[in-house]
Length: 333
Image (tube, rainbow, N blue to C red; front, side):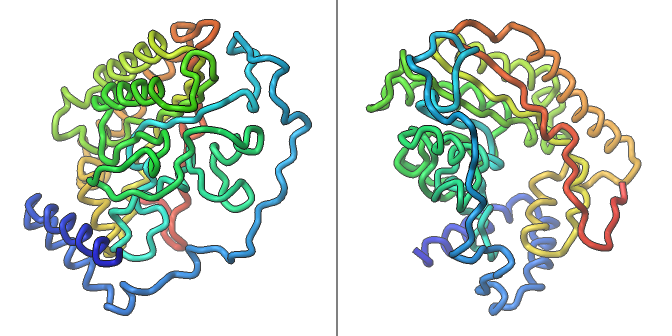
């Protein structure tokens, strides 16, 4: 397995070389800061003691409804029979538990915030693990890790069908894959069982905006979100969809350490990272980011995607998300 990881990492980094000598020079400069000993080191601050447990989850009513609800307005947490997720690397959880550069290509789906099924709520807090407290037989929680770019079986992904690197124009194809998977999955009653889907998509559009402003426009972002939600509404009964608001991306410019991970970030989101501070290009991108958020709200703050057995809910918790800067490095935007 270790050799496989090394091979995957080597192939990934070698393929990135073709993007340009400047990028490769930056990456090599970053990796020089790592001795061989450091590359093989397990960082204890990124792991928890085996004995660590979160406090016991308490809720006054954790029972299912007396009968399966026919209306979305009466669905309780314990009525959810399946959980699913669509999106990009923030949902595949690529590199989430990595402690060295060799872990970068690993998708730690089993601890993904919206659908990870590793352990239990006491060990890892994910939406899926919370729902498992209400329904221990919940279907779809991601049980394992996958490797970016390699085909994975549903026994590893669960219903986490997000794809690292995807843009919003890929969302309809992810949606089709999910619908077909749910419809044919043994053990799931497609017509009767209540299903919960979480979608987080759009950050890669911001990262790629300067490369093709037409393809990654606000209008296209909304178009592909709309197409995907209409597919779900027209074809999937008894579903609740969480659409998560996208992040304000400008804080990524503070990622400046000369380490492999930071060098990769600078390459993967060059449209945001490369413009000079207070430049016209940066101001435009920040405004586009805000417009993505506003248009998504306009789309979903209505009853367009609502019927008795289907609802789309905009989750706003990332709208003003501002990750804390490193100690001693206040924001410099």
